[in-house]
Amino acid sequence: MKNIAPAIFPPNGIGDTKPTNQAVLDWVHELGNLTKPENIFWCDGSERENEFLIAESLKQNVLIKLNEKKVPRSYLHRSNPNDVARVEKVTFICTPTKEEAGPTNNWSDPADTYSKLYGLLNGAMRGRTMFVVPYIMGPPDSPLTKVGFEITDSKYVVLSIRIMTRMGKIALKRLGNDPKAEWNRGVHSLLDVDPDRRFICHFPQDNTIISVGSGYGGNVLLSKKCFALRIGSYLACKQGWMAEHMLILGVESPEGRKHYVAAAFPSACGKTNFAMLIPPAHFNGWKVTTVGDDIAWMEIRDGRLFAVNPENGYFGVVPGTSYKSNPNAMKSIEHDTLYTNVALTDDNDVWWEGKDGAPPKHAIDWRGNDWTPDSKEKAAHPNSRFATPMRNNPALDPDVEKGEGVPISAIIFGGRRSDTVPLVYEAFDWNHGVYLGATMASETTAAATGTVGKVRRDPMAMLPFCGYNIGDYFRHWMDIGKRLTNPPLIFNVNWFRKGENGKFLWPGFGENMRVLKWVIDRCEQTGGALKSPVGWLPSPHDLDLEELDIDHKSVADLLGIDHEEWQKELAEHKMFFDSLGGVVPEELQKQREQLVARFNE
Ligand code: OXD
Ligand code: MN
Image 1 (cartoon, rainbow, N blue to C red):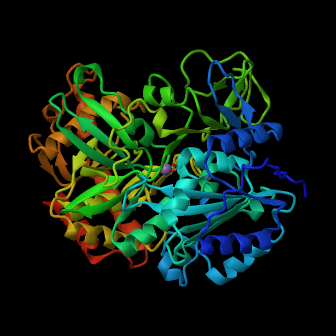
Image 2: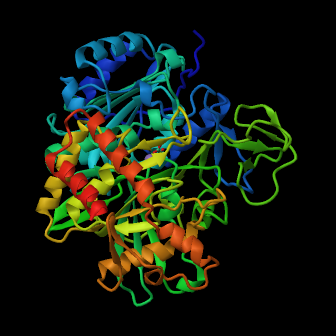
Image 3: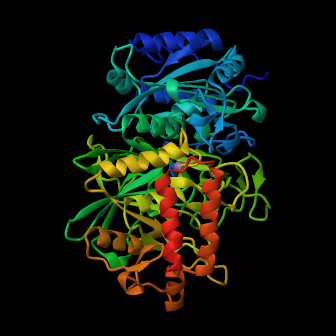
């Protein structure tokens, strides 16, 4: 087998920051004996270490240095063309019983899976360096913050984790020496990047993840989807908090009144764009700030929900990102950014479909082949990504490091739906809001392998990320509601509704501020609404549509409830709940019956 990750040999003073916690040392020792690396590199997160790893990655062609003038301190990585997205069909939740993983997860028996994976890992790091990467998820002094370690043989993973988390000594300090302290064990090996030997396995009871055979971010940056969401959601249910696939943003009025909103959208549906929204000129004086763009960890304090962003960087979808769609993202990725699977121009700049300006006359595409505007293939892979530190974001919220988190006034659910679902509506109460989340659906995207554009139910955008039985997850949401004396209001949005001509009815992007403003008005009890069978709906004059080029018919279509479409939708809700095989809590079944009854009134 060709060694795709040859060992590197650091000089003294680099790669030798060994933790002192005996449990960590024992675990690394065990994995070292199993995978038999050439050497072990103990990461400390320092600048010097990072520079050394970048230099070695350039030598081994793991990275390509980009034009220093155009994109300073930035690099391009190309993953194997067979390995460009999360693979849900080889993602497993390995709980003692199948029932604990529930009807929406692939399950496999923990003992059998450990044995299979240990077989694959046996000798897998021969001739390679084993990196031990300590990191924390959450602000340094937050009670919600958790420690993880990832063992990996990929330099790209180490460099990415350094961007995406608070990595290195800070985690060793947080963990301390208690051998019983809670920390996540993550093991990753590229093996030979063979799709037939690719498995992403979670052992929630052991706080352990083993991922083999992939080098794509979502499968291998174990801090993110694997720990912060799958294992995180399991721990959250057990410990009474919430781990959600949500962005967190702040909205401040010209008078200085500020609210925080958390929003769950499936992968590649615009969470990063929404989190970095720039209000249109009409909203002069309004400010939107980003706390997080993908994951929220939330807990209850004084009867309210408080959220932190466990991450330290953004791993966003590149194609479509432009100064028109997301100026803050563009500014964030102009420097100190690690790109994956975008195109490389002749002057070592990066390019992707949807970037501002004309396409280059010639480029090297994401597979490393020549590309011209006449090529049939895309220059950048539709799921090409940037990893960039959140510090790069000009709209970063000043309270992003606040240990107690930010108080959440509203939760928004949303999906990509061409029809049926109105632009925005509000749930009648918490449990109705849980129903909105539980039945939300979206057209699938390139973030995961499989068909693109097919409507699938994706409860709370957590279908691929809930690390335990979805029925228990719904129950957990309702239990949280019982403990909240000042719960966030819950909304559903759909930026993607299309008109009869097949064109989007809503302009989206910055104009989503108009919807956000209504959400805030509702939180402040100043916004008007009409009662509809699906929830509180704004009438056209409840939305501020001034200075927006949109006709009355489009607004009516955006806010309309088509009873025929909804009969189909209601039948699909039932089919979805039925497909879950009896795990859906009684209260949610009741919500469905009440919704049906409201349509029949
Ligand atoms: C992501 C995803 O990468 O949801 O954030 O797939
Ligand atoms: Mn995501």
